[in-house]
Amino acid sequence: MKNIPSTDLLERYINGKCTDEEVALIKDWYYSLEGEPDHVSNLSVFEEKLLEEQIYNRILTNITPEVEVEPQPLDEPVRRTGFRPWYAVAGIAASFLIFAGVWLAQTGRLKDNTAVNTSAQELVIITNNTHQVYKSILPDNSVVWLNPNSQIKFPKVFDTRFRGITMSGECFFEVTKNPKQPFIITSRAIITKVWGTSFRVRDNDLSDCADVSVLTGKVSVSIKGNEKTENTAQLILKKGDVMLYPHQKAVYLVNKNLLKPEHGDEPTMLVWNRVNLTFDNKLLSEIVPVLNSKFHVHIKVANERINRYILNADMSGFNLADVLEAFKKSLNVNYEIKDNNVIELE
Image (cartoon, rainbow, N blue to C red; front, side, top):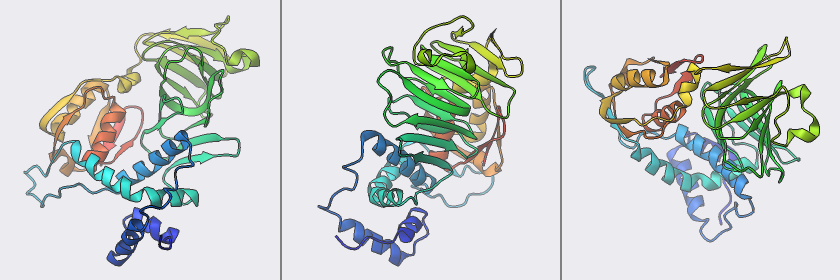
């Protein structure tokens, strides 16, 4: 194997800032790796998943569309896009960059606005410092969507008695069912025990209240200071706890130390509904009103050129976060969450 290129060079390559000569040098090094150790064999399954998630997200942010279209007059659509091309491009890029990604990760140089750290205690900390929703997969294959300025902490290997996670900010969870290993979420003021599947928790230091809203399944909510240590990891409903079912919500008022249930649909939860949408050669300007109606949000397009993109896509089973991520990957369209129901495409 030839000498490993410097981390600066590899980082420039991932960021698309290499000269033609530097690209040739890295390719020459890559082809020399055939038959050499793959540098990931000693990683656990979860470590591989974390590394893949970081590299994959970084690759997708640097991929250009597979087919570039010549500039069109303003009254003409500028791009026709389905969801297949970026899969193919990403696959090729991922297979080529995996060695560079491992090297940068091992030297602490792989960075983006979503921080993933591990400590000596095997604790994983994920902080979303972006203006977008960040999707993370836990060791048990449960899924967490972190809103901007949110954080989760969890062990690389869950305790055999329960699956414990701490969080701050706003997160939506889709939890893998396992009655023998309860899923317990601890936040600033409340403890949420999962008896079912999908729900949202909002609890941060800047708010005088915390709340939990259930989309499917059931969860119980208790005040953090009232929970005995030995009961934290058990699915036990105690006096004062609130059991929630679909379309129900519990609110904890910090100043009053009061936990109370609320009934009725929570409008901001509609963004997590999974819907079936199919668009056959539709302009984005036609798609946005459909999304606004389905998810009860206000999507604004900052660049008029984006409205002329044409999309051919099957979005069966997508929630709004999935749709926005699909736009980002297939149309190279970025987005920013302004508040709970205003999203700007750019």
